[in-house]
Length: 133
Image 1 (tube, rainbow, N blue to C red):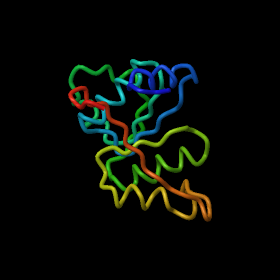
Image 2: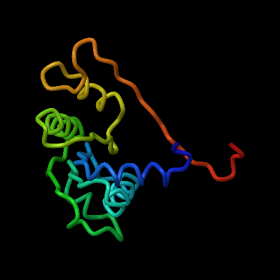
Image 3: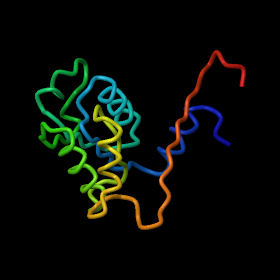
């Protein structure tokens, strides 16, 4: 049973690395999270975004990532979704792009990720050490 985030990371490591594609992955919070996942050995990451913005991140070795250059947020989503749809990635991650633009890309009928009559869900997992449960 998974009771801590470390348990989840251990399970992910046991399954082997996945290919992560990040749509508009150029803000510091996204880059830190992706870098942590790469360091943990659970993903190989591709960032779709503005290379100049991505390179501004401090303390992160950008040579660890594949960077696909695109400056427009909706184009970043389209490229990232298409990469996952074509089997070039296993997991899609939202970067700084707004949720409506991100969802529009995922639900795109031409190359989106949800099959007809498919179900789309969202899960958040948090570990709060100060909480008693």
